[in-house]
Picture 1 (cartoon, rainbow, N blue to C red):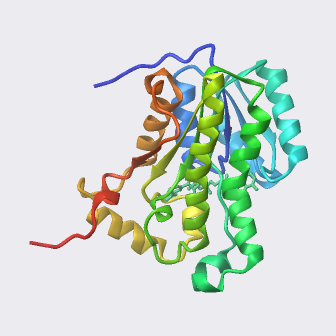
Picture 2 (cartoon, helix red, strand yellow; picture 1 turned 90 degrees about the vertical axis):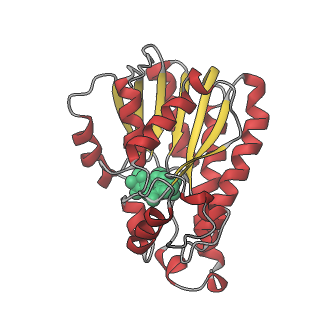
Amino acid sequence: MSVSIDLSGKTALVMGVANARSLGWAIAQQLLAAGCRVGFSYQGERLKGELDKLLAGHENVWTQQADATSEDDLSALFGRVKDEFGGLDYLVHSIAFAPRAAMDGRFLDTTEADWNTALNVSAYTLVSTCRHAETLLRPGGSVISLTYHASQKVVPKYNVMGVAKAALEATTRYLASEMGAADVRVNTISAGPMRTIAARSIPGFGTMYEKAAEAAPLGRNATPDEVGKLALFLLSDLGSGMTGQTVYVDAGSSIMAMKIEN
Ligand code: NAD
């Protein structure tokens, strides 16, 4: 079955594409295929080359460097959005970071500095980007971010990032409650494990990836393409009645308390 969605005339900003494996790229590909005009922000200059390669041959795209923790960078980025698009329909926040040391050791040993970094980059930046986007977002607009089930249940080694994702999910609800008055929706996608750069920084990710697939009702992990399709649903008018939600695309692994072989 194929459903085609026409987003020509719509505009999107996608934050957090590092390479072809990035979940932000899976989402951007769906937006581009639907005819949406897309601006991309990348964290630092070393990521520009990879993004330029991905976008070669695409029309209706532009890129700008923006560290999401910098108010100056966000001001410049949303100034660019205004210049390029006039207004914004869709905002994709696909950004997270925690220092490796905070995931290598015990949760009990999380330092204040690592806690602040993880929560700042992975949760607070959704607040700050939404604040910068607020006056540009058009009625019917939609914001999404990416979260993970370690917010709800303990995933060994995920540590402070699980707390950051819990904050991101709560942030989604608070933003949704305030931005709904302007007819803007805010949701977060809870994706199962996927092999990206961010995932590689989680100790034992390979084992986690295999266990999640074994436990999942579908007997596999969800794919970045499936994240992209859910994103298209939540961003577009298909998801018009949904806001403040954490929506899972994980082949069902999060519903399982345990798996017992028969
Ligand atoms: P990725 O490494 O491809 O993307 C993470 C992005 O965050 C990178 O582009 C990086 O540059 C950006 N970033 C980090 N700090 C930043 C900052 N200060 N300013 C601007 N950008 C910054 O990995 P990914 O897995 O595609 O991660 C995207 C999102 O998906 C993250 O929120 C991640 O937690 C979430 N997620 C990933 C998985 C998974 O298994 N890969 C599962 C669930 C949720």
